[in-house]
Image: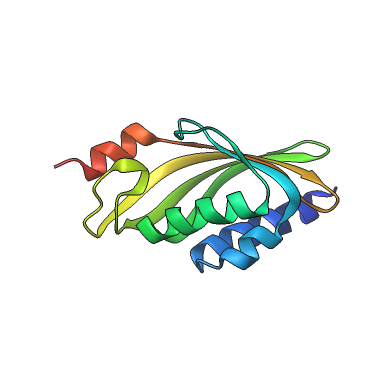
Length: 136
């Protein structure tokens, strides 16, 4: 895949998260894709229905306002994206009480691609930074 193709998939994925468009999020993945958030209880999930369910739950708790790209590194069939996530914590995102507060946290993604779509998404969120912003 070219860098432009990878960027288009990642950017479309982020725009779908910002719009809370579960169908568009799921459409960006191959049917048997794997989705993993480091530290998530239960570990990685696989398949469109499980990925959709994860995002439905997440986006009910966390309104994603925007992703601020810091940098990207590219391989033949993957991209590593370092971003800052700007969001509003409405519910209990990742177990932290949101109370409608704004948060900005560092986020690292590794996207693996296959068949022109996302084959695997791995995410590492700065949970300590999120906790510091939502404690109290």
